[in-house]
Amino acid sequence: MLQDELVRVYYEDDTASLYVATFDSEYLYVLCLPILENDAKTKGYTRVVESVVDASDKHGELRNILIKYNSPEFGDSIVDDICRLFDYPTTIDMTPEEEK
Picture (cartoon, rainbow, N blue to C red):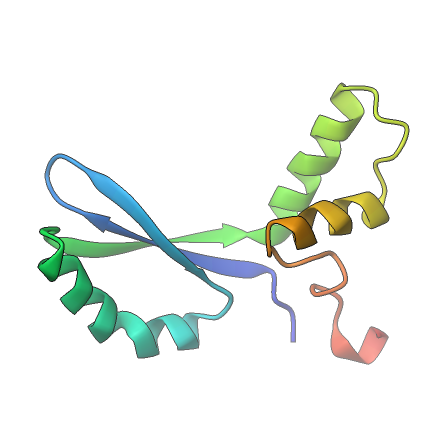
């Protein structure tokens, strides 16, 4: 299974947006949605919205930043170390299990 898509969740109303969580599966997000909707209402927000993010795009963006600032290191190892620092899926997490 590839974990390349993440679901970011926000509470919103007509004037504000609040980042709440990131789920590594749509299934888990859907399970939590009723709880998230209730929590949003108790905090004064009118809706729960989600945004699907492709983790591999973020890995590429991070690699480009490292290259832009002339980092001598920009391979998977440093990208994975930075991802772990922020509890974000690594390039290893996105490798199909049969290739591991």
